[in-house]
Amino acid sequence: MDLFFCVSLWKRAATRLFHIAMILTCLSVCTVFDACRSTNEKAHVLIVTGGHDYDREEFKRLLDALPVTYEHVEHPHAHAMLKAGVIAKYDVVLLYDMPPEIPEEAQSDFVAMLEQGKGLVVLHHALGSYPRWPEYTNIAGGKYHFSQWVKDSTVCPPSEYAHDMTFQIRVADKNHPVTKGVSDFQIIDETYNRIETLPSVHPLLVTDEPSSCPLIAWTNSYRKARVVTILSGHDEKAWQNPSFQKILTQAILWTAKR
Image 1 (cartoon, one colour):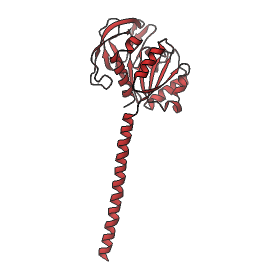
Image 2 (image 1 turned 30 degrees about the vertical axis):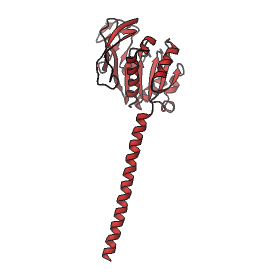
Image 3 (image 1 turned 90 degrees about the vertical axis):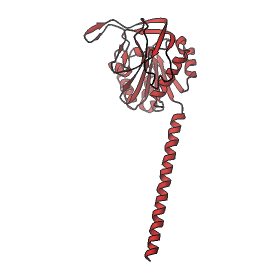
Image 4 (image 1 turned 135 degrees about the vertical axis):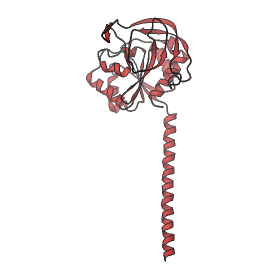
């Protein structure tokens, strides 16, 4: 009787161990599958334009060359896309816009989107968006000033730009995922000077070009979001540059947490 009881207990224990092992195996397989799926799926990007002219055909050619899927929205319809139920399907928002105003409701939706961890890429003239919304400076990590501004009690002149400049860009952080595999390169592009950059940003690209501010690209953290700001990217002369394309691609993937 005792022997039968012991055998019975052993069988039940062995069955339970088998079931536990099967569950752990399934969980492991599911974790690996989800990780592979997350890595292999293309990032889904919302492209936002409006408020500044650009070559639509050439810009679309740039976007089509990137290894991502995307949808394009233009102001005044862009702010509706920031709503929680709409923005959920996107991994990253790429701003190539420059609207002067943003309603309070859209401000709340914008911050809530970043609180959810959506990636953000601020490209070229998008640094000049929403000049009267101070929080946008904290989000982008800098600001293009259209009028005099004050820094540390010093009055600074307005920001300025110069078209079709040929200059050298150096990689400040060669180990960062956004600049990984990119060497110093030359580009023909519009430069921005006398802009504001927050001291908390992490430099990615720099230049010694006199018509430009020293910092060309940087990363910023805002709430739970990764943010990359890239000052390059005025027109096809920059868009066709292989180094620019690589940096833009890796900025999208990094902000998407791929």
